[in-house]
Amino acid sequence: MSKTLFIVLISFAVSIPASAQFTEYIVRLKDKNGTIYSVNRPQEFLSQRAIDRRQRQNIPITEQDIPVVAAYLDSIQNAGSVIIKNTSKWLNQVLIQTTDMNALQKINSFSFVMNTSPIKRKGLTTVDKRKEIIHEFKETTTSLNMKDVKGLNYGYSGPQIKIHNGDFLHDKGFTGKGMLIAVIDDGFYHYKTLPAFDSLRLQNRILDLHDFVSNLPDLNDEDPHGMYCLSLISANVPGTMVGTAPNASFLLYRSEDVSSESPSEEQNWVAAAERSDSAGADVITTSLGYNLFDNPIFNHTYQDMNGETTIAARGAGIAASKGMILLIAAGNEGNNSWHYITTPGDAKGVLTVGAVDVNETPASFSSYGPSSDGRVKPDVASVGVNDVVQGASGGFVQGSGTSFATPNLAGLVACLWQAFPDFSSSDIMEFVRKSSPTYNSPTAQTGYGIPDFGQAFDMLSKERVRRNAAKILGDNTVAVYPNPVTTVAHVLINPASSGSTVVRLIDMSGRICFRKNISLTAGEIYILDITKNSLPRGIYVIQLSDGTIIHQKKIVIQ
Image (cartoon, rainbow, N blue to C red; front, side):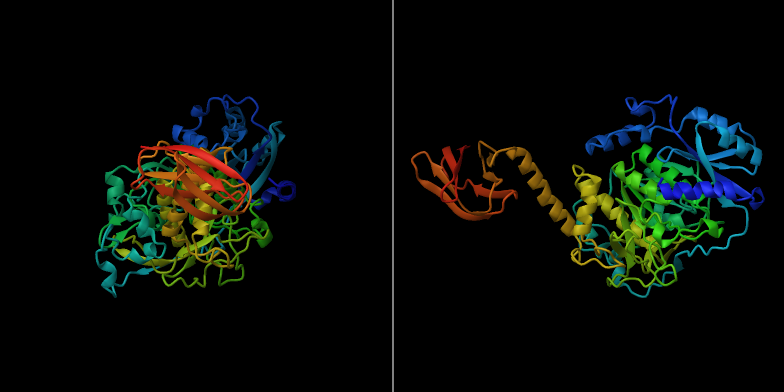
């Protein structure tokens, strides 16, 4: 927590009278002294999948990953009429519900408590939640319902996938299988019965559920917003709607209370992100954003959108540091006085998603960047105008909002990572950004632009070759693999200086069997393939010469 926010929270705690009837508070803790857990035994608080994700990316397990101290929770719970709603181990804080001022005073006296701060007030909702626009899907064209030439039969959802060349990934067999996506939202209305989720249910690919608003281990039929978002990724109704990662597995978490708007929902979100991490999620997609609240004393300002101030942004930044890819809606504030992105869309290390239509025109409602500290936000854009989604009544409808752009892109990001599991989360996000044709000219509404997953696949393939080449080269200037050569010799060159170089393949009699002039750039690995063709078996020398310096490598052709 920043020093500035710390002062604000203390001010709230001492200046707001009890008569204000606050009902929820954040209790910030000083430490994790006396914990029963150890970073040397992470399997006690992290799933093996979460541990493996960290190990693949060389991410250490630290005290930040250790749960809030149980003895502290017991003391808080027993201080009076107090309900513990959830905790955040990353921020080391507890969300409690109470109107018992004596209990609150006692909690503030505990030696392990840093401070308590009100976060929700009893009262009527005054803030417009600005839900996405949903309308009945009018089947005005038959062209979208034609079976694709190859691969999946997308039906009406084809344009929102093909704008990203997402069918390229699907045609290669990357449809999300083995990937775990957490959807953090406000409700998953009738996900147990609606047709878009038939295969998801039959194949038992919903691996965990939790309601962080009501603190329940299951989801009831709350608002359909999360269900709409889930359908954009997981739907599998050939000829009508297919999602962007139809074979992925899912974690479904409710963090948003549609009946009110308060910062406690940001705390709920962080708790859900922590559970996503502990369960081993690869990707988190969330179509929630916060700026104004029912009680205006909690309102954020645009200056707060710096990735370091709000509870949600700090939690999202930590989640990203654990090796997950987070996709977060930019918000639908483009047409109103707020105008800018909302939190946690300002978080660092995440992909914030703006909205365009299928013709790549930015949606007027899509929130603008940059973040208040000047970073490009949103990062990228996806279809958020007239997306096809599963309808609450059983049919299929269209909806608009950055809420829909975000999961639409999240599924494709998961498929891309499925294809390149040897790359880190930050690598995948960077190549997603770079795959856009407008990467070098970012805008305030679409960021770096609309990702092209065919281009991302190609760039990652080349980067994989380059990284493998770097490992083979080590500290050498020249290396050849495989050696002995059976079909093709891959000549790897890591030049110390830039310039023109001649590559020759010379047999033991001194005859030049191959010659090529190449241009090299210092520090950039160059890969030259020499095909065996009709070369006889024997020992050869690969020779590099820039006129004065010669590097040689002996190879065997079988």
